[in-house]
Image 1 (cartoon, rainbow, N blue to C red):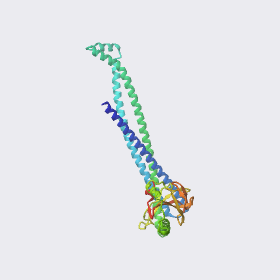
Image 2: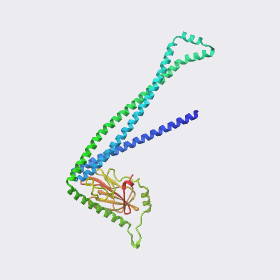
Image 3: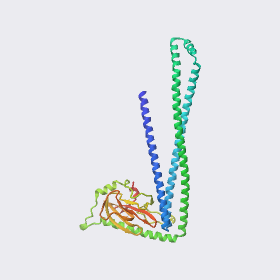
Image 4: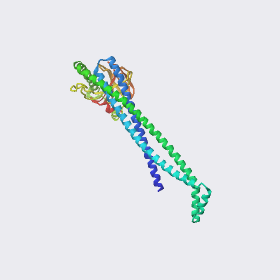
Length: 392
């Protein structure tokens, strides 16, 4: 029985430790996610101020506001999850306090009985009479032991009561801390909801503005389409050129080791810059004129801070540096049969033919029309990939 009890205690301790570790990990994960969302919102706010001061494009502002609304909603959802989690902790903690209080009540009742017995037997004559009234010698010894142990039991019981009271006070303090934290989270959520409603109102006002000036923004969209199509043609031309057959019909060699290493790192590549994704990969409809399709996006666009350095996502060779309308300077890096493309740079710190390492700076993002954004693409030979599937 003793060994079984020990095993049970070890298992209980292990499970408690494991649960504590999981809780701590979840808490850190939630804190990290909230911090990331708050940082994204701050970056988007800065972008919006720059766009409004340097650009008349309501469409650019709308895209940023819509992304901010999305991030703000996620932040509110995180707050809701935290509030629910703390509410569960408060409930569990209250139950624990109730159990400790019940135990304290039981200890106190037993202690009162000991005190009453001690009081009744405070006169030594009563003790002697109690012992002498024993039926036999064995009972007399037992009664002597009881009287001697009465004081000791009272001391032990008093220590138990004191320890239980301390435990109760500690748990109550934890409960009060949890309640204060929950209240703080609720206050923050109220602020976040107000900010969210303001952002949604701003977005609706911009939509109204765009609807009133459809012709103007249709022209902007057409110009954007031409820029995207020109960029796509240039990327495809460079990639075709890199794999075109040379003299004698031989295909240009590809670094197969680098190719395999790049493929193995799908989902693990570092981000080329720090910032929220404001334009995602693929085909999208216009945010206002839903029947109008936007140009197919072969990559993603990140909103970043001015002066942000762009870094290579993997080892490779700088294949070419080009300048494109609307995208400024662009760097194409080859990784075997894969290519990564970095656009909207103001300055470039590499040249064609340079070998680059993962994390090496390629250049600095430019501010174009008030927007400081990095456009990033990944290609597998002549097929564009969704970068978010490749980045960690």
